[in-house]
Length: 198
Image (cartoon, rainbow, N blue to C red; front, side, top):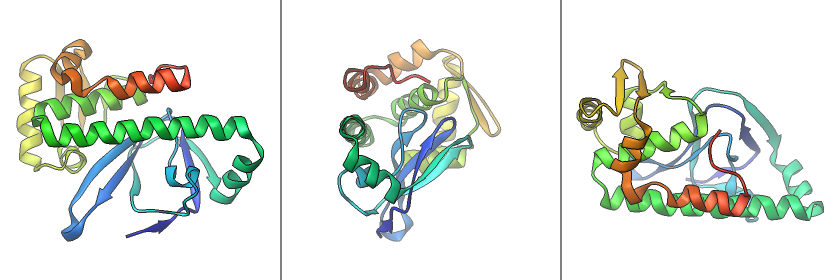
């Protein structure tokens, strides 16, 4: 179902999830946005509607801008338009690598990748998330998330508490995520000239 893009959100802190919804209420996270970007990507490509939902998964602060104001700014500011279109390229790379991870990686690897992506955008080790929400974001059952978190915790990579996950060993998570993490982040740095770390 398409939704009109009425406003754009530029998060300063927190994490906004781009969620794809299908028939029967099925949903999975298609992308993450934090201090690295914005919502409403289709607007940058000339669209006025989005087929994705955007929801804050970790609360924070940000800036809201009416969609029409951004459309007008894009017409008059070539440098802004160029930079935001480069950002859209990074979003497309992130989306394609999310699809790759959903299709080919086991849940432990997908979870490790997702935790790293969240930490990049939050700039902190503690992620305030429930198992239920993690299950929605990864497109799996809650019990699958619980088992995967127990394995990561047993390996000393995270500490899981009710409503939060604390990253204890980032290097270990990167090793577990292997090639499913890093390509979009490197692409972001190459195109925008700054590392994808808040």
